[in-house]
Image 1 (cartoon, rainbow, N blue to C red):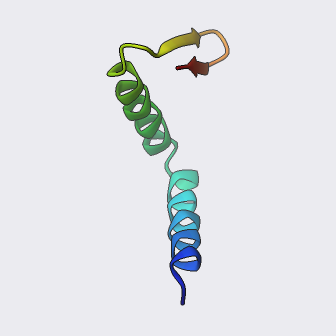
Image 2 (tube, one colour; image 1 turned 30 degrees about the vertical axis):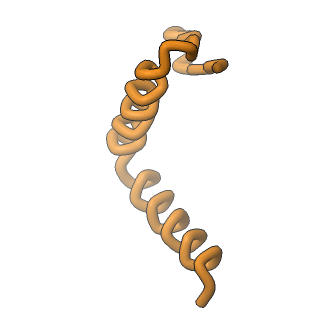
Image 3 (tube, rainbow, N blue to C red; image 1 turned 90 degrees about the horizontal axis):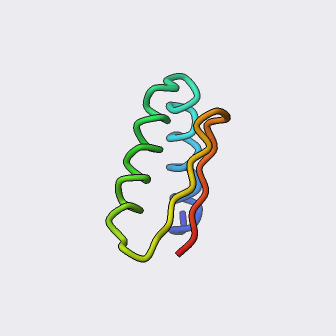
Length: 57
């Protein structure tokens, strides 16, 4: 099995876990926001009413 196929299978498994546990998805979103916030050049735009996040670097 090649690396691309293995990576796809791992992502599919992760998606299945996240689908069953929405809190884990939210945790991943917050970790991503934390990582983006470390970049002084990044600007984060939060739409708290709709729960959308966008960014530009």
